[in-house]
Length: 88
Image (tube, rainbow, N blue to C red):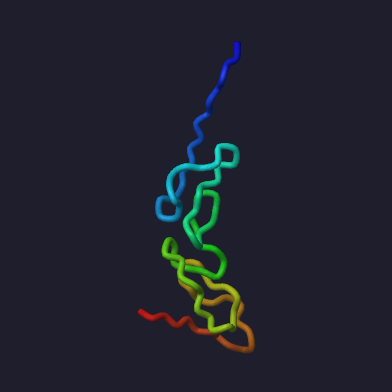
């Protein structure tokens, strides 16, 4: 006689960042939308900001990344402040 034990894993996928609430049963990794990462799909990929819309950082080539919440460029090069320019 075989006894199967099923463990229900609470995925806790972020509804704004995941395709659905399903996840890998072994790792708990949710299925993320484009430009989104994290086990629960709760943050933008590097070089993107404004979760869950995940817009590209706009640092005009003077920085490689930006703050994921504010979009302010990080570690600007060539003695610049690499101000953030938005289309808003």
